[in-house]
Amino acid sequence: MLLENNPYPSDVRVRREAESLVDAGHAVCVTAPRARGQPRREQIRGVEVRRFRAPAGGDGTRSLLAEYPGSQRRAPRGGRAGARSRRGPSCTSHNPPDTLFVAGLLARALGRRVVFDHHDLFPELVMTRLRSRAWTAIARAAERATFAAAHVVLAANESHAAIARTRGAKAARDVCVVRNGPVAASVDAAPSIRGGRFADPRLVYLGEIAEQDGVELLADVLAQLRDIHGLGRASLTVIGDGPARPNVEARLAAAGVAERVRFPRLAGCRPRVGAPARRGHLRRPAPPTELNHSSTMVKIAEYLAAGKPVVAFALRETARTAGGAAELVAGGEPAALAAAVAGLAGDPTRRAELARLALARARELTWERSARELLAAYERL
Image (cartoon, rainbow, N blue to C red; front, side, top):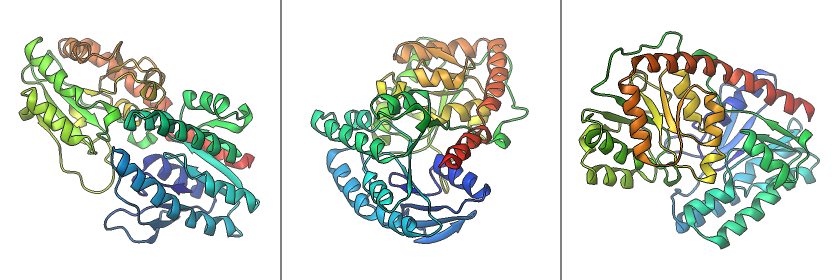
């Protein structure tokens, strides 16, 4: 498995796929960027991990030009070793970026099968981050090459599967939907639900703080709760970090709500929903762009597994993930999100109903179900 944009085992999807394959008897080697303090090689739960040094990423053109070509030179080295191994029948590349097709073509030349695990829409991501038609055109060409190099595509959701069949020209039989989801053991059996009307709704955002996530909108939500709905004691916990955090903090200060927000210090890899998230409302602010409409937000399933009410914009894949177990708001205005939060704060009956629906839906989304689709796809190879 070749991974460029996240260290291993921090990427939850890649870790769960690798470990599921190992548990089924496959030998798995992951090549990934090396985070600070990580050894160059190690074994993690039966997965062989080889790491390469990668430049630090960022949101601008210069940082991307430093990150992607450098990783493009280093990542396929692990792929070459795996492709030549007598026990290496397949090569799996994970995006973004869609630039690891070179390793896929090498693997095909050596008679190996190639799998593309489609995490994100790379052209839309490039357009969001760089706002350049020229770079987006290059990204679309890389996407076409990535699909062409793959024998099988693992799609994170139905939107990605449709893109593989249309833009990628893949046959339906060569596209398999492997959804992200919480492991069954993480679904809260008996979540604690505060009763009564809230004067201090507790909001939580979980995940990376990047430009496309719209986390800065939370400043406007808190300001609306204070100024329009009389909920000045509303608080927010942001569990995560990312390149857009300075912008978020500046927006919070400008709105006069910074003292109501905390960013817990995180230890280790990407966190699961922890104690702060399990005691309040859970919500996410991703604005309704085409990228976000087509993306499965892993955090939504984690919110559901915590058994808490979820408030979100009515994005296409968010609605599919929630399956009726969330309060979805049309449009992309923070005022609408704030009104939905305020409504839930004053309606304990609706909160309890959403918590019940959340747990039921989370049990339908567990990773164990997705793992069956994953293993079936590899068996077909």
